[in-house]
Image 1: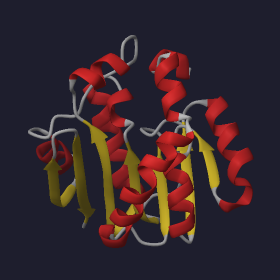
Image 2 (image 1 turned 90 degrees about the horizontal axis):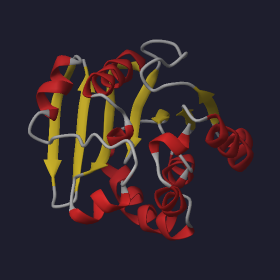
Image 3 (image 1 turned 60 degrees about the vertical axis):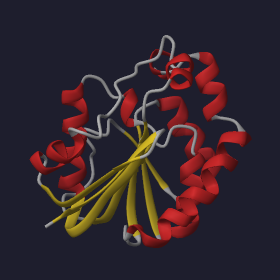
Image 4 (image 1 turned 135 degrees about the vertical axis):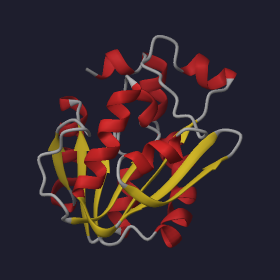
Length: 190
């Protein structure tokens, strides 16, 4: 399945120690103020670079991975430190209103079409308890980004439309910030 979403170069990069090191400090710093709580669901962890950081900062972490090979890799890497669920982020077999946080990092652009991204947003809201936080980061298109994604599934998330899409999914207190290379978002379930 992963070979349909990511080309070989992209898979190599995302599974590299270089990528894991690159995400560690920014994610650690972000976690200090994210307010995701201690019972978190990570949608689309892929090779687990962000999972490694989250596992050290969350009391309970559940990883939802659609690719069966990557799900097994996560299970083998993290053992009983996390729970791994093999499922689509738009249809997660977990209880409603049970989690303090739902996060996703640099994976939304692999969810196609836009309606599937919206279904993922709605599912994130369903999983959250009242007051829970949905937050994440995704990449914005650039020449390098486009070259890395040749042959990949690539549906970038527009920072201009993301606030309305998250609101439509039932979130409040929606904050979206765009940098030159990323869109970051943070929203709350009332």
